[in-house]
Image (cartoon, rainbow, N blue to C red; front, side, top):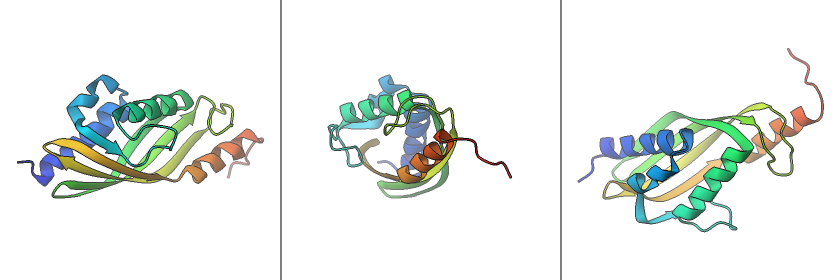
Length: 144
């Protein structure tokens, strides 16, 4: 039986290994066979293959790091507040690479079953990210 501390560690390790280190070959260690990702765009399947596609697309558009700012785990549910630190290196939402460094806040909710992530939801402030990129794509900003 998994404890909340075990589940907390599984989620933290998942974010570090899969998102930050881009070790997609390790997905089986973290995801349940019936994993469902409720946060993916409609064009992608809501499963591990869709997650792989999303991570690859994100990594083509950005050099990125996810930093956990807060993590609350109770039973089989873990919620994290995170900060995405990103440098824009590829096309995203029609914006050509700017080299801009951006920072946005997001939230993720994970459900775990038998020591693996079975479901995932996410909310990231994509509008803030887009605004930061569009501002930098349209000229110099005055430094204060």
